[in-house]
Image (cartoon, rainbow, N blue to C red; front, side, top):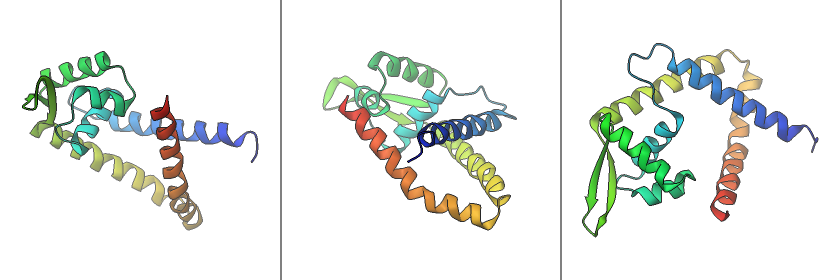
Length: 150
Protein backbone atom coordinates (compact mmCIF):
# COMPACT_ATOMS: atom_id res chain seq x y z
CA UNK A 1 0.00 0.00 0.00
CA UNK A 2 1.32 3.42 -0.88
CA UNK A 3 2.24 5.44 2.18
CA UNK A 4 0.20 8.40 0.86
CA UNK A 5 -2.93 6.34 0.19
CA UNK A 6 -4.47 6.47 3.71
CA UNK A 7 -3.99 10.25 3.84
CA UNK A 8 -5.38 10.75 0.32
CA UNK A 9 -8.40 8.56 1.10
CA UNK A 10 -9.12 10.39 4.38
CA UNK A 11 -8.72 13.77 2.67
CA UNK A 12 -11.09 12.79 -0.16
CA UNK A 13 -13.75 11.46 2.22
CA UNK A 14 -13.58 14.55 4.44
CA UNK A 15 -13.71 16.88 1.44
CA UNK A 16 -16.71 15.08 -0.07
CA UNK A 17 -18.57 15.17 3.27
CA UNK A 18 -17.79 18.86 3.79
CA UNK A 19 -18.92 19.79 0.28
CA UNK A 20 -22.14 17.81 0.62
CA UNK A 21 -22.89 19.53 3.95
CA UNK A 22 -22.20 22.98 2.51
CA UNK A 23 -24.32 22.39 -0.58
CA UNK A 24 -27.23 21.06 1.48
CA UNK A 25 -27.13 24.10 3.77
CA UNK A 26 -27.64 26.41 0.81
CA UNK A 27 -31.24 27.40 0.29
CA UNK A 28 -32.43 26.20 3.69
CA UNK A 29 -35.21 28.31 5.13
CA UNK A 30 -35.10 26.59 8.52
CA UNK A 31 -32.33 27.17 11.06
CA UNK A 32 -29.52 24.77 10.26
CA UNK A 33 -28.84 21.75 12.41
CA UNK A 34 -25.32 20.90 13.49
CA UNK A 35 -23.71 17.72 12.25
CA UNK A 36 -24.04 16.23 15.76
CA UNK A 37 -27.75 17.11 15.86
CA UNK A 38 -28.35 15.42 12.50
CA UNK A 39 -26.38 12.36 13.66
CA UNK A 40 -28.49 12.14 16.82
CA UNK A 41 -31.74 12.50 14.86
CA UNK A 42 -30.63 9.80 12.41
CA UNK A 43 -29.71 7.53 15.33
CA UNK A 44 -33.13 8.03 16.95
CA UNK A 45 -34.77 7.45 13.57
CA UNK A 46 -33.05 4.06 13.33
CA UNK A 47 -33.48 3.22 17.02
CA UNK A 48 -36.69 4.81 18.32
CA UNK A 49 -36.83 4.86 22.10
CA UNK A 50 -33.05 4.87 22.53
CA UNK A 51 -31.86 6.31 25.82
CA UNK A 52 -29.46 9.21 26.23
CA UNK A 53 -26.62 7.08 27.63
CA UNK A 54 -26.96 4.54 24.85
CA UNK A 55 -27.07 7.34 22.26
CA UNK A 56 -23.90 8.84 23.76
CA UNK A 57 -22.12 5.49 23.44
CA UNK A 58 -23.35 4.99 19.86
CA UNK A 59 -22.21 8.48 18.84
CA UNK A 60 -18.98 8.32 20.87
CA UNK A 61 -19.89 11.51 22.72
CA UNK A 62 -19.99 12.43 26.39
CA UNK A 63 -23.37 11.95 28.04
CA UNK A 64 -23.62 15.63 28.94
CA UNK A 65 -22.96 16.57 25.30
CA UNK A 66 -25.82 14.36 24.15
CA UNK A 67 -28.05 15.78 26.91
CA UNK A 68 -27.33 19.27 25.57
CA UNK A 69 -28.16 18.16 22.01
CA UNK A 70 -31.37 16.53 23.25
CA UNK A 71 -32.38 19.71 25.10
CA UNK A 72 -31.88 21.80 21.94
CA UNK A 73 -33.75 19.33 19.74
CA UNK A 74 -36.64 19.04 22.22
CA UNK A 75 -36.84 22.85 22.44
CA UNK A 76 -36.82 23.13 18.63
CA UNK A 77 -39.57 20.53 18.24
CA UNK A 78 -37.54 17.69 16.73
CA UNK A 79 -37.32 15.23 19.63
CA UNK A 80 -39.71 13.92 22.24
CA UNK A 81 -38.16 12.90 25.55
CA UNK A 82 -40.34 10.35 27.37
CA UNK A 83 -39.78 8.78 30.75
CA UNK A 84 -38.78 5.15 30.42
CA UNK A 85 -41.51 3.09 32.12
CA UNK A 86 -38.92 0.45 33.10
CA UNK A 87 -36.64 3.03 34.78
CA UNK A 88 -38.29 6.29 35.79
CA UNK A 89 -34.86 7.98 35.99
CA UNK A 90 -34.11 7.29 32.31
CA UNK A 91 -35.48 8.94 29.20
CA UNK A 92 -36.41 7.46 25.84
CA UNK A 93 -36.03 9.54 22.69
CA UNK A 94 -38.47 9.68 19.79
CA UNK A 95 -38.64 11.79 16.65
CA UNK A 96 -41.41 14.31 16.11
CA UNK A 97 -43.24 14.52 12.82
CA UNK A 98 -41.26 17.70 12.08
CA UNK A 99 -37.99 15.76 12.53
CA UNK A 100 -39.19 12.94 10.30
CA UNK A 101 -40.10 15.44 7.58
CA UNK A 102 -36.81 17.30 7.95
CA UNK A 103 -34.73 14.12 7.82
CA UNK A 104 -36.70 12.85 4.84
CA UNK A 105 -36.14 16.14 3.02
CA UNK A 106 -32.42 16.10 3.91
CA UNK A 107 -32.02 12.51 2.69
CA UNK A 108 -33.88 13.27 -0.55
CA UNK A 109 -31.83 16.42 -1.21
CA UNK A 110 -28.58 14.61 -0.41
CA UNK A 111 -29.43 11.71 -2.75
CA UNK A 112 -30.36 14.16 -5.53
CA UNK A 113 -27.15 16.17 -5.05
CA UNK A 114 -24.85 13.15 -5.03
CA UNK A 115 -26.83 11.48 -7.83
CA UNK A 116 -26.46 14.56 -10.05
CA UNK A 117 -22.71 14.62 -9.59
CA UNK A 118 -22.23 10.87 -9.92
CA UNK A 119 -24.18 11.05 -13.19
CA UNK A 120 -21.60 13.52 -14.52
CA UNK A 121 -18.85 10.91 -14.16
CA UNK A 122 -18.12 8.46 -16.93
CA UNK A 123 -19.35 4.89 -16.60
CA UNK A 124 -15.92 3.56 -15.53
CA UNK A 125 -15.75 6.03 -12.63
CA UNK A 126 -19.34 5.26 -11.58
CA UNK A 127 -18.52 1.54 -11.60
CA UNK A 128 -15.32 2.16 -9.60
CA UNK A 129 -17.35 4.02 -6.95
CA UNK A 130 -19.99 1.28 -6.90
CA UNK A 131 -17.28 -1.38 -6.56
CA UNK A 132 -15.62 0.56 -3.71
CA UNK A 133 -18.81 0.68 -1.58
CA UNK A 134 -18.32 -2.72 0.15
CA UNK A 135 -14.72 -1.83 1.07
CA UNK A 136 -15.80 1.61 2.34
CA UNK A 137 -18.52 0.00 4.47
CA UNK A 138 -15.96 -2.43 5.92
CA UNK A 139 -13.62 0.48 6.64
CA UNK A 140 -16.44 2.29 8.47
CA UNK A 141 -17.17 -0.88 10.44
CA UNK A 142 -13.56 -1.36 11.54
CA UNK A 143 -13.33 2.31 12.56
CA UNK A 144 -16.57 1.92 14.53
CA UNK A 145 -15.36 -1.29 16.19
CA UNK A 146 -12.08 0.34 17.20
CA UNK A 147 -13.98 3.27 18.69
CA UNK A 148 -16.15 0.79 20.65
CA UNK A 149 -13.01 -0.78 22.13
CA UNK A 150 -11.67 2.49 23.51
